[in-house]
Length: 163
Figure 1: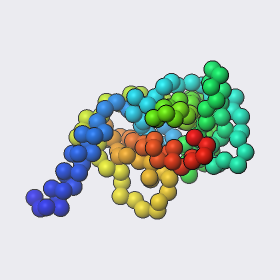
Figure 2: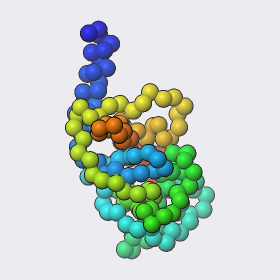
Figure 3: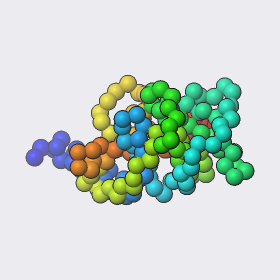
Figure 4: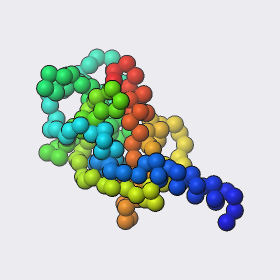
């Protein structure tokens, strides 16, 4: 084994140890994504959305959640996949990251995965600087499926001034 191979394996092991845990998985288009379960506050049906003028196109507006106004992000738009197509499976996942509470629109919620360190790898080595790529912490591999693990701090940073 050469030094470069050892470094890659060491990096993957450290990443896997850091990211191991439970993730709520959901579908956007044909892909599966996950967020750390500890950030999930609740899953709700889409409520009346109030548009907010002059915001990032991925911020579809705000919702009134039991008297609390929270911003709502369309992750499909955020990742360049077009706008969400509302179906009976479309839901809002209410997330809390630090002191920030916001909702994300997703096509459907799938399951909770418990990822072990050896099931986690770095994000794919792609270039281009799109928000979708910078929002990935890593990938979870279960059987033949790949789940993209999201970095909520980068999603929030992309909505500066709204979230």
